[in-house]
Amino acid sequence: MELSIYDIIMGPVLSEDAHKKNRVLGQLVLQVHPKATKPRIKEAMKKLFDVEVETVRTYVRPGKRKRIGKSRLFTDGSDEKRANITLKEGYSLDLFGTQEAVAAEKAAKENK
Image (cartoon, rainbow, N blue to C red; front, side):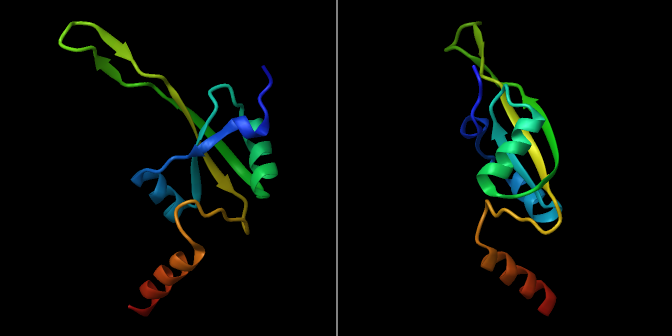
């Protein structure tokens, strides 16, 4: 099965850690297809969002282990593949809010 660029990127990760990486380091944290490769993720970002990617780092988060009822049986959740993406200088992609909100936050910090 060949993955299309629309199948590769499944969506952003909306966690506090992902938001902090976006704000402080300028990295995007995305959930990607388990069979997606780094070059394919880079290509999908370029075609879908019209941005240039500097680095792509991928990792697999194992699924959580859950007990079934009150028995001794356990089941494992599905694994999740994520990608930390750093964009090249001059490119930005806002996944957590508007650019105006970020600019207002920076202006408020400078005025203190």
